[in-house]
Length: 254
Image 1 (cartoon, rainbow, N blue to C red):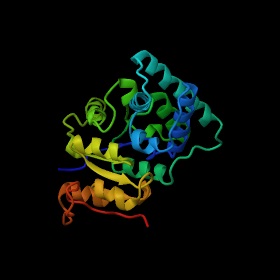
Image 2: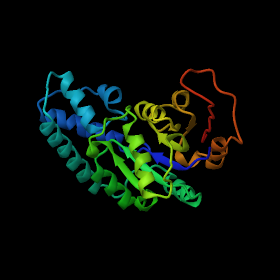
Image 3: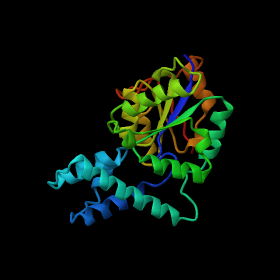
């Protein structure tokens, strides 16, 4: 088996915008005359789509809304997000993302974004950061109404899309590498049958490496040649004694 494609999360992996999302969700709750809880974001929202997050946040407060109302809330938050980005002189893209994308391109591997973010947000950020051309596809679970991570649907949809858009007509999930920063994202990729790199931008390194197959501090620290050798069976490490891991390699950027 060889590595054929790389699938990358967006928020917290490409762009450091999760604090902004937390603030916007709190603002939205206040606009609905509901009190935000600063401890809820990590527990409820990290790695999940705005739609899934808002439904649970509202439900915890006894509010049940229909799909149309939920769509309007997601749209309001998206508009506020884009407006805030316009005010920033420079987007908070994580260090080394562009260099990582260039290395993947040099290896001839297609990439896709798999995210719960609204599609226009992803397109806007990637275009402004000069990264859009690196990605063959963007799978936005919010826009396609796919189940939010930790469900594997977004990752499986990305495999289907790459089969359509590239020469990899027989691409299988186990031939893909996923890159994630949250538990929900890691669980989604693993449920889809993929090897996962955990980027320690949201959770501590030592926590992330217990959940993923690889762990790095930033994308720039990921040794793609070593990962490729692992996929081809030319390099294996002893598995760690942990039920959530298999054949784990830990690659630190420290």
